[in-house]
Structures are given as structure tokens and as C-alpha cells.
Length: 146
Image (cartoon, rainbow, N blue to C red; front, side, top):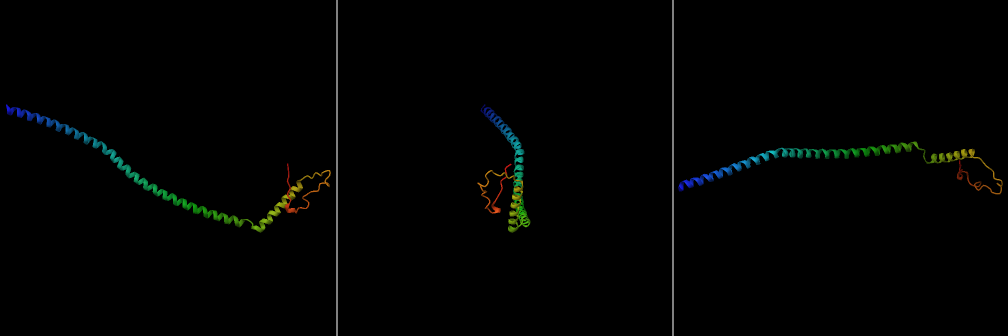
């Protein structure tokens, strides 16, 4: 009887161990399934990291290109500005002719204004002499009200 009880106890232990092995196998299968499910996101993450590195390099290259283009544009702009200034200075009269031109223009405009101006004599004009009579011609100006 003792032998039968021992055999029965051993058989129960074997059954328990088989159940534990089955549970462990099921857990292992479940873990393998979860690991398999995580492989695709891990691969996508790896590809994304690779793409991110490539984009970072491309971004750096484009920044350098933009900086170089900006410097080139500035240099071109400065060169063009200098050229236009030189061209403008070559086309403008110098200080001597310019001053003469200004005086001539002022005189011409004063003459035009005087021709268009109506003179209304005051009744007692002799009593109120014109204060501009003693001024040099270039200091005079005419104000025309319309």
C-alpha cells in the first residue's frame, strides 16, 4: 500500500509538473507572440531613426547652402549698389554746375511767378514802402496764394 500511495503521490507531482510545464510553455508562447508583435514597431523605429539622421544631414546641408546663398546675394547686392552709386555720381552734375543750376532754377521760377502774379496797388503804397526792395534778388521769394 505504501508503494501505491507513493506512486499515486508521484503521479500527482508529475501531473502538477506537467501542468506547470504547460503553463510555462503557454507563457513562453505568449511572450514570443508579444516579442514578434514588437518587432515591426522596432523596425519602424529603427527606420525612422535612420531617416531622421538623413534628414538632419540634409537640413544641415540646406542651412549651409542658404547661408552661402545669402552671403552671395549680399555681395551681389553690395556690388550692384556700388555700381549704381558710381553711375549716379557720373550722371549728376558736380557741385559747381549743380549750384549754378539751382540758382538758375530759382531765378526761372521767380520769373514765372512774377509774370503770373497780379499786382494790386494799395491806396497809400507810398506810405508803406516794400521792405523787399533792398534785398538781393537771390534772397527774394514769392508766395503765390490761389
